[in-house]
Amino acid sequence: MESQNYRNHRKFYPPHHFIYLPLLLILLGTGIYKSMDDEQNRLLWILFSIVLFLILFLAIMVRQHYAIGLQDRMVRLEFRQRYFEIFGQTSDGTEDKLTFSQIAALRFAYDDEFKILLEKALKENTSGDDIKKSITRWKADYQRI
Image (cartoon, rainbow, N blue to C red; front, side, top):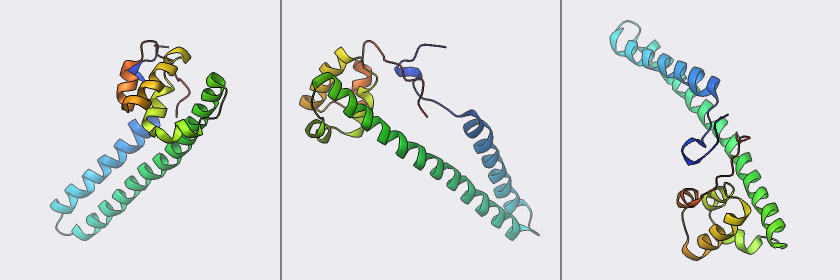
């Protein structure tokens, strides 16, 4: 397995991203094309296209909503646990000062860099993307959804 870093840390779910969604897009494109080309069945093709668009939209939104919502909660819990293990106190005051993007970015840093980058994020309001780019030793997360 290739070691994880800033350039390759995103994850795709092949059946969803490379089969289901492209197939829906192809069918939607076909429906739109046919609705312009087939005068006799135009209304049917328009209805077909609308239904496919709604299925596509629903597939994207529901999958993303549940997965991202759950993952965000877990990232926050991980931050709280890690903060407690490093500093021996709760992270309530600190967590409230950080954006989710900053919290998510800090998880890719090992403990020694975590402290430095956390302090920098609190003082300079560093963006999550800048935090990720500042990490010198990337702590891979191969269990992301």
